[in-house]
Image (tube, rainbow, N blue to C red):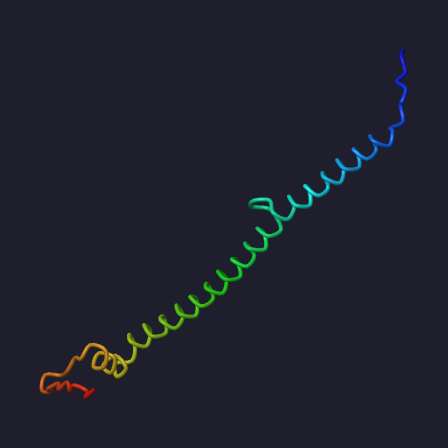
Length: 105
């Protein structure tokens, strides 16, 4: 069996190896920051987007709850139903006349 003899690196080779190691570390660091889809900035952007969407979901849940309450009220309270019909849809009873007035500018 032959044994491999390790040779010590000369100064020039040591500087070259040092530069290669530093470049590899810098490239790895930049990859961690900017990697598409999994880098620090991509994850931060996704986190911000998730918070925004969660807030929007909560607002929509509140709106849905409000609308469901309005539906229930319209189904059960005839006075409220009549008021909404008059205000929103300009409905009148048989013996009533509706007058619309123009506002002066």
